[in-house]
View 1: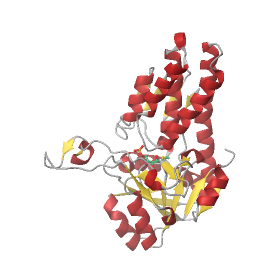
View 2: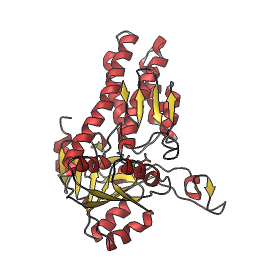
View 3: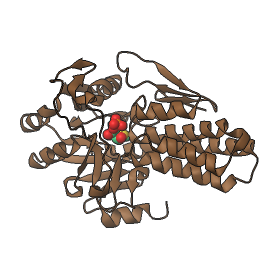
View 4: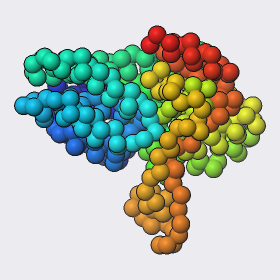
Length: 345
Ligand code: MRU
């Protein structure tokens, strides 16, 4: 059993808070098929790297239940493929599916009911571990925030982007728990508005002084207001420390460098992809042009205009002051530190 704001799992059905409708409507989408789980990830009912990973793990269990009468390696490969083909950038998706698949392969000669039971335990373990590592990262990260810090956030790396607690917002959560006052400028995060819709909602619930800004205001805010740090999550971190995160992150990192503002990335080890040497190799998702030509369904651009809509960008490792993981805080240069920290799981 898992029950958080982001997701509820009872061993059979997965309920996801429908993040497309937040903050106006708080409604749960119920999935009882692996097709439903795949669509929920692809269509962004659930989003955020760690949340996508845990959701896919539950989707894998549902896929096994669908195939209980013929639980073969071939069938489970196609369940895995279906879930893997939903979004390409967040490595947590593939990490969670590989972990579920290894579990399955280690048990495949056993009875289907037993296998499903064990897969269920593994998926719940992934979900619980996520909450646990987020709290650990929060603890490490909050030490970098002084009393009365002001931060800029981008996209949503809060409880909603994880099973619970959040990565970058977990750092703010932990600082508050330590009695610190933290204020946040929240980038709206065009085109999908995760900042305006989700981060502002979460931070206000946490009691953080929250000021919403359009993405193109961040430079001016850094120049004219007191800002101590930019804190973001990550979708994939290469072996050299290059960070793929929501489009606009790279611009923020450049602005932070110019204005002497710290730039922190908070991400679990499951987001580090040591197979990828540098950020140039990270696949960047491109999304529908409608996200750019319309805002919440209202057309804002000429019908036939050409559009480019990359959902993520890559921030060079040397622009990142620290990567906060559940095993501690890494500082640039990252190559050796990432190799050491990821060795031996
Ligand atoms: O397209 P999204 O909303 O899935 O993008 C999410 C992000 O970019 C987050 O910053 C990232 O996944 C880290 S979430 C803890």
